[in-house]
Structure formats: structure tokens, C-alpha cells
Length: 119
Image (cartoon, rainbow, N blue to C red; front, side):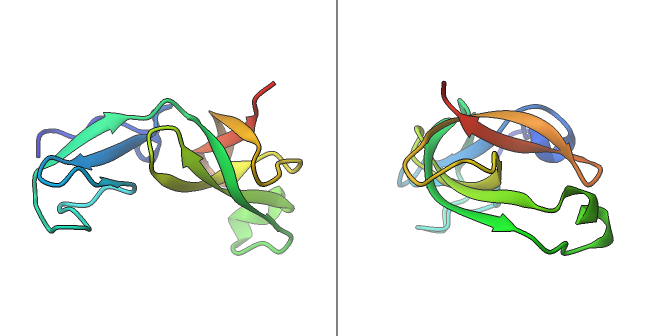
């Protein structure tokens, strides 16, 4: 695997996923091997930030003292147009099936993906 492209986990406004060169499986978060076939040959790609809401959950209780200021906040599972599913933050009004796009917002001292409904 070559040098990792910067993404939101390093403070850059980007979502990066992996594609297995051996079997074609897509995966998100990064790993050093393919979760489907175990191959170490992964290609890293930048996602568009477009997708569809698969599930949504409003969090009303802070998990840590750092998240207390953000309660309530919405966590969403998004099926990206690239073909992988990811969890991120999103607008409170999001519903299953909504088309969404990502931008990035501060949350508990970090920059995180934040989805909002496509207008």
C-alpha cells in the first residue's frame, strides 16, 4: 500500500475509502488488508461525499464530557454512490432514503463528515 491520502481523520476535508485490487471489495475505514479476501493490495480513493441515508439515530445523551455541548446530535448511516456504507453526523431532519451530500463540521474538537439533504 502506498502513502495514505489525507482525510477527515487527519483534519483534511475528505472521505477516503479502499478498493481491493485482488477482489474489488470496497471498504471503509482503512485497514491493512481486504476484509473479504485478506489481500494486502488496497487502492485508496477519495469519495464524492454523495449518498443516500440508510438509517438515522438521534443521540440525546452525551457519551463523553466533550460531546455534551452537541446533544442532541444525529448519527446517520449513508450508502455512498461509490458503493460503501459509512457512519457520520447529519442534520436532525434527515430521513431514510434522503439523498445527501457531505461537508465537514467541528465536533468535540475534531473535524467530522456531516451530511445534509441535497436541495
